[in-house]
Length: 198
Image (cartoon, rainbow, N blue to C red; front, side, top):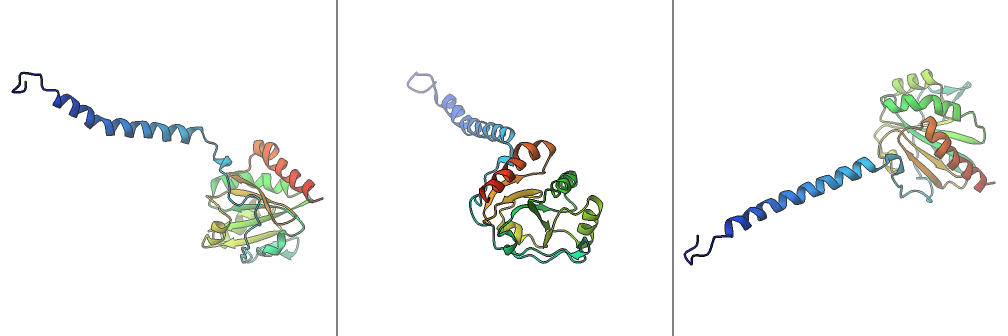
């Protein structure tokens, strides 16, 4: 009771003020959790869609040979006039092992070229990886320090891009290529790029 005889309401209102920040934090935490659970990571937008492929030059994977010829490194000129599938991969990446046979099968499509960017990997492990699953790539650039992948806007490996005949990035897939997204998404983007350039 206060000295005026009225009941003291100050402690009750202070309790609510103390609980207000906690309630706000819990509401924000719940919102972030819902957004994380509902999103499809493969649908992360790329600022590079519709823009020319980065002018990234990367050295060849030393000692990599395909059909008796040395596999060249990444030169930006490789994208002109061809539809390309660019895959960023590493031997230490578990999902890369899962998608490797799918990429090898995709490479049988002679209408496109497969370009690999080997991300922060050791040359021996990268060659062993390609020896184990087969090398789908006609070009392999070594991105030892990760700078090239930053230029491509890579969030993490694996990631796959479709580049049109004019050298413009037309599609980006975050995460591994799977049987489901190969047919429903990636091949659709490839066919669209093939038709656009013909």
